[in-house]
Amino acid sequence: MVLASPQSSLKMAAFPKALLSIATSAGGLALFLIIASTLILSHPMGPRFQAYFYGVDSSAKLDLDISFANQTTVGHSDDNDKVLSDRELSRNSSNVSVMADAPSGDLGHKEAQVKPNPDPLSSVVPSTNDAEDDSPVRKDSPTAKEGPLLSSEAQKTSSDGSGCDLYHGSWVYDTVGPLYTNNTCPVLTQMQNCQGNGRPDKEYENWRWKPSQCDLPRFDTHKFLELMKGKTLAFIGDSVARNQMESLLCILWQAEVPKNRGNRKMQRWFFRSTSTMIVRIWSSWLVQQTSEPVDFAPEGVTKLHLDVPEKEIMEFLPGFDVVVLSSGHWFAKQSAYVLNNEVVGGQLWWPDKSRSMKVNNIEAYRISVETILSAIVSHPNYTGLTIVRTYSPDHYEGGAWNTGGSCTGKVGPLREGELVENGFTNTMHEKQVTGFNRAIEKVRDKSKSKLRLMDITEGFGYRHDGHPGPYRSPDPNKITKRGPDGRPPPQDCLHWCMPGPVDTWNELVLEIIRREFEGK
Image 1: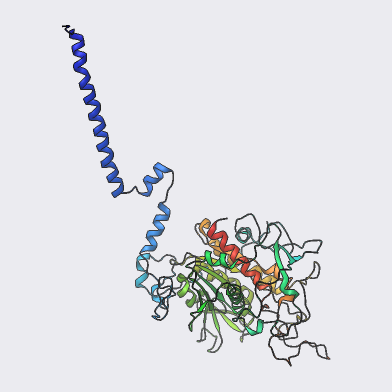
Image 2: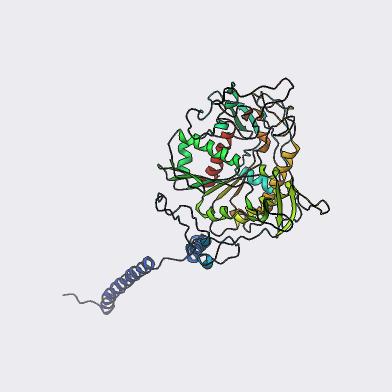
């Protein structure tokens, strides 16, 4: 029998103690992990801790979600029309406040308020042209004309930051033809149904817009409906807005027949496959109009409150995801201009010649654009995409619409050097861009601005062939030629034939939406 030494006995006694210590530590660690996991699952890390551990701060988005969660949801009062009950349009303006500084908690308890444009008569923002110049001329044109005058901010917005300017290019002939025909679209207004009204030529349907720096994709109906799934697009404005809305419906109709869900306040077309709604709201000027006496303007004269956005637009705005605005042409019509309840100008109306007129019709247009866009970007319940389609050029050559102006016999886009500059169109475009820029300047975080300028004015100045001209009705006895005295027949050189150049506007809208929703 061999006896162990005292040292070996101590070593053997220490060995079990070490194992016990290790086992105890492992058990304690396991218990800690179990308790910690339980706590994490029941109390997730806040955004500040996420930022610390992962380098991502989601607090801004979280704060935005919380601030809007407490605001009143806009609903619809018509029980017979509940297809999109959570996205339908409100008829009750008492739930909406457009005061930029209104606290979110008070939205459900105040009547709708409209914040006036604070400084409509302040100085005009200077414009510069930083864009590479490309002329909107026919493909066979050898040279390019100087591009439009845009401020740096508008130029950035018009290009959507993608590196490709959509609005400088040329018209190229496309043998594929239009996206639809007048026989495949039942919602086409008869006055724009040029082929149905007997127009003998069709080449105007085949010219497509080609940006100089990239390709503008042909309209993809399925892509549009997928991008707009569960969403509402609204055209707001005058009869040119209706022209564009009908063009979009005609294009989409080739893929799916929508259901008419319109009412007295607006046209609404619902595409069931993707729960997409196309809406149109009529607004001549986009600002509030009244007929009651104001200052020295009597009852009966239309008063435009240039510093107040149209209340109906503000009422329905929260129900829209994309808005396309159209305005300008009604500023040639008779009206009185009001700022702060004071008559400051008028168009085709100014009875007291001893009074000085502070605002003419083109300056009134600039103020109206700034007013409506400022109200839209400051609306607490609207976070949608707003597309401002620039002034649509008319082509009344030799006079105005009521003084012998004509676009008869135009069968193709103008060539380089053939364009006759329209001073009024250029000025209206410049004022519109200025109003747009000034609204952008009021946005605190410009990186989050969703105002987009769709600048079609220059390119469409070359499309004098795209209007109905004398082919405004199917009447077989209508006059389509000049008379013996050389006077042209009555005609429309403002609106656009369908199909025709106006379809390009919706290809541009789709590209803007794609860039916004899919990324640039």
